[in-house]
Picture 1 (spheres, rainbow, N blue to C red):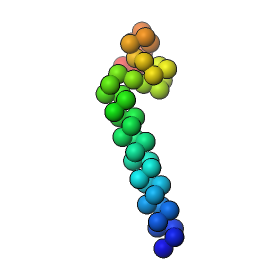
Picture 2: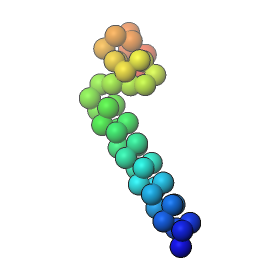
Picture 3: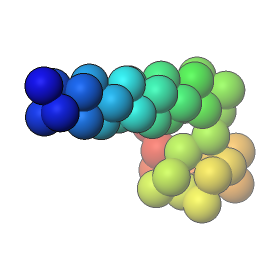
Amino acid sequence: MGTFVVGAIVCVLVGFAVRSMVRDKKNGKSIQCGGDCKNCGGHCH
């Protein structure tokens, strides 16, 4: 039972991280370009 609870918590945390990355990408931010695709010269696309 403990393994299931810990696994569920990890899945929720991973889901939040992925959701945050998708939201940032839609807003024009990217980890690869230092968080701002406007200043990377088009390498993010």
